[in-house]
Length: 142
Image (tube, rainbow, N blue to C red; front, side):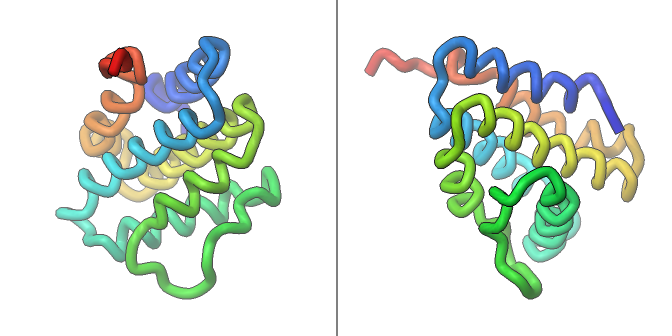
């Protein structure tokens, strides 16, 4: 289910690639957004609940490519940020941006089907703000 925020994710990640970001930088941005999602949802549904949503997201997004084979079978106890980051970092930058956006948009759509658009936007707003502020909001001179 498209929203201004989830549509902005793909636009932001593609613009970041055009500005010269590497696949590792894209992977880190997506990982930071997922960590923000984890922080927002864990108090409500617990680590295992967030991990289960993430696992379902990956399953739903898997149809678009074999790069998502990093997930483990079984009941997850937490999101595996490093595995996702590693999988994205191994892609070309534009592919990492597309695939990272797909994961974030799919998570957004899944959560929207469960709790509705209004609550989803309120819950994920901090994660989107962190992602969409991008690397330009950080001091990169050091």
